[in-house]
Length: 212
Ligand SMILES: [Zn+2]
Image 1 (cartoon, protein in one colour):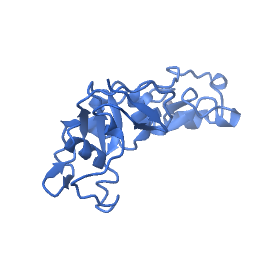
Image 2 (spheres, protein in one colour):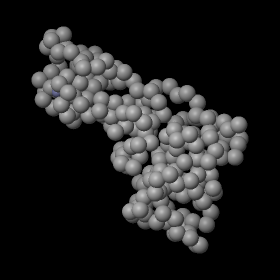
Image 3 (cartoon, protein in one colour):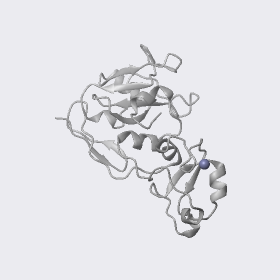
């Protein structure tokens, strides 16, 4: 049985083969330069890690993804032909976009998904909560100046026009309604969406409903 514990936002620990896959590991046999020393290939590049069941688990640094491939703990699901190639002493490894664990790891239920602008926009599908047109701002339904919280329940994607017209008023004062009740999203892929700045287009199909 695979088992995994979580602490302080990191997937760690384990007592099974495939268990330490998410823990930091030394990189044997691969030229390990300091982060940022080679134009950001190690530093910024992220690889989507899927469970054996294809559930998205984490956005790994390229180095850890390559280690998992070298150790035989994961396989490439989605290669990136235009991506960087990492050279070890004996071989060249193309950094893929998406990899998948060979062994299933159990991921415990996690509490609230942190709210970020990117995740909020994905939740609302980049549509204004008031008029449905393309949204590019975040609006507090109950304005912060009137005690509204910065929370999933009180924040919505909004177009600039609606946001400007609404200003610091309440919906009841405007006679406006929300197209949907804002709620915190649930699911592992939302945690990923809230933690990454740029979404690799190759990941979208693995991130589930709401990611596109
Ligand atoms: Zn609008």
